[in-house]
Amino acid sequence: MVKRLVAVAVACAVIAVIGVLAFAEPGESSGEVRLTRQADGSMVLADRSSGAPVLDLYEDFDCPVCKQMHDAVDGTLQRLAREGKVKIVFRPVTIFRAEPMRSNSIRAAAAARCVPEDNWLAFRSRLYAMQPAPHGVASGFTVEELAGAARKAGAVVDECVRSQSYAKAHLEQTAKAGIQGTPTVLLDGRMLGNEVFDAAALERAITGGDGVAV
Image (cartoon, rainbow, N blue to C red; front, side, top):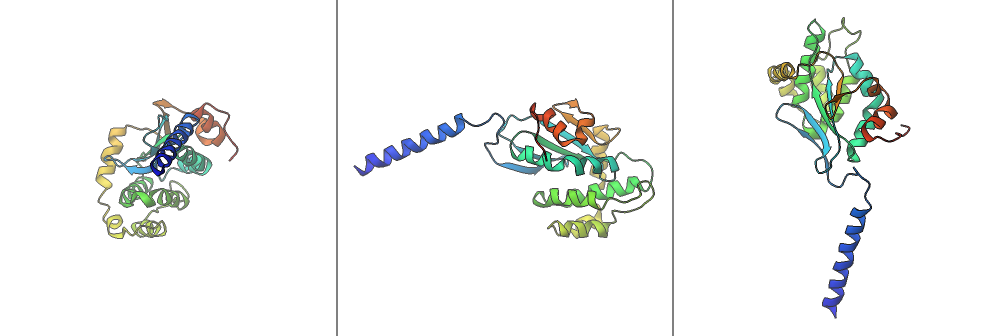
C-alpha cells in the first residue's frame, strides 16, 4: 500500500511539472540566469537554455551617450534578461582617440575586467555614475577611484586595477570589434536606432510586444 501511494505521488508530481512547462510563456526563463565572462572580456547576462534574441551592446564607459542609454534602459534590459526574453552581451570598447577621454576609457575598461562576475553589474553602474565630466575636458577614472568603486561594488581587486594588466587585451579586442561609435546595439545582428534610449520602445523591439511602463 505504501509503495502504491509513493508511486501515485511521484506520478502526480511529474504531471504537475509537465503542466507548468506546457503553460509557460514563450521565451520565459526556464533555467538559471547568470552573468558570465567570456574569453574576449565580454559579459553575457542570459538564461543559456532559452531561445531568446541576442542583444550585443558595445559601450565605452567614458561615453556620455552610453551613460544616457544606461540611465534610461538598464533596468528594463536586466529585467528582460532575467525573464529569459533576451540574452545581453556587454562589450566594453574604447572609441576615443583624443585625450583625456581615451585614457579614461582604457583605465575603466581594464578595471572592469578585474571585477568578478558577481560584482560586475554593480561596478558597471558605478562607472557610469562617476563618469568624468565635463566630457572632453575632465580626466578621471583614476586607478584609485576605480579600485574604490570596485570595493563599493563588493570586490577587492586593488592590485589588479592598479596594474592595468588588462589594458592591452582590451585594446586588442576593441580593434577586432571595429566599432566607430557608441553605444552600438545589435539585436540578432540588426543595428538598432533611437529606440535604445526609450525603455518601452526597446522592449517592443526585443519582445515584439507593447512594452511596459518602467
